[in-house]
Image 1 (cartoon, helix red, strand yellow):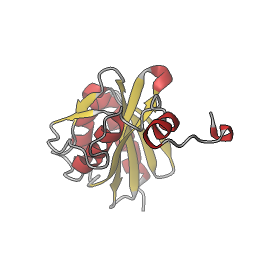
Image 2 (cartoon, rainbow, N blue to C red):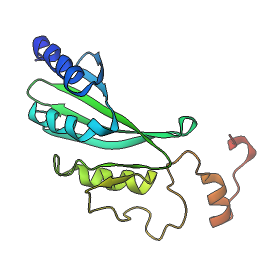
Image 3 (cartoon, rainbow, N blue to C red):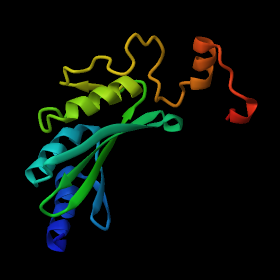
Length: 164
């Protein structure tokens, strides 16, 4: 059962200690912090019993020339979820790894590195897993034209109905 007093304490702590922007929706916290506070807030949340890391991923905001890098965590005791996110520039996509905090983040970061081209400082697992022998740009970036790639690589042209 979620303790509202604890939630209030947690929100105030995040806002005060990390200058975070926090929104709450039922038992989910949406937290935005600066790139510089990304690792520190992860450490803090682990100490607040958010022991379960669910994922690390990214969103490509091409029109803003930045990536949103985020991780989802869960506090089983209080049944609270949190999405912690930050923004980094597309032209310098690098952020600290969370692998020293949650070991399973290394594999999620590896996938995000491979598919978006974001480097995670301190993660020594950053090597191809899904795109072995890949010569193109990271395939989950919005500027990657998968239709053109399929046409060039496999000679398959999609019907005009599928064009964007």
